[in-house]
Length: 281
Ligand code: PLP
Image (cartoon, rainbow, N blue to C red):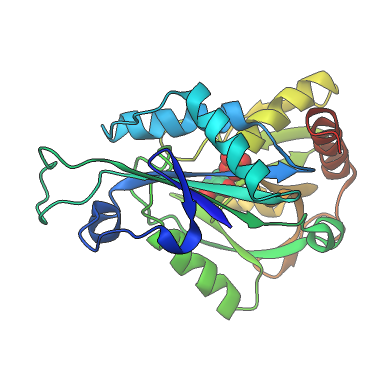
């Protein structure tokens, strides 16, 4: 199995990173996860565009343009013979003597590797139970940075409490999931937190907003409170790996009739159709 390190294909076991890499010491880096269906990356341009933006926001130099990256990752998928999987891509500011200041001459380190992935069909059919947690993250979560400590802690907290996932709430307002965006449906209208510095603008989220328009589903980027979340007719999360997963209970209280809803199913089908047309197998 191959990985890409700084533009070169290598064996997985020949990809060694310095212990002085700033990604390791400071979380000084950014990443992306791109889904591969039937051997083809889905929405890769959109992911690479966000990757470039994340790097720019942290002032980390990305030595390849989006087109070069796309070629590289297509090659990686081909040599690894990935059919259903994901590409993990990470860029750090590189290795240097430990100092908070940006290093003068460190070379940024770009890594990409693939892993198998399958659709979470069981959860997509049955739905998940979530718990709400305080959104203790910094105020620039629009940058897909390596600093996932709050996300890790709340996911474990949810797991330990017997829930499938955690949903962040900031000042009473639902922001997003631990690795997903959150949508609620009330009286036929779909709501999701507006893009900005308080959520990661999910590639799946953006695709669903487009699909809503194309399929005549009313959808607005309007924030809602935790109390309003509990009163929704339907709730679902969206993400590259979770696709569209229904939420059937929040903090032990059923959403709607406690079963995945019809508009959620419409979004699932619309996304599956978009995947089929972009990634024919
Ligand atoms: N929000 C957070 C915090 C995430 O980690 C993710 C990643 O999956 C998302 C939202 C969803 O983004 P995307 O649809 O681009 O995967």
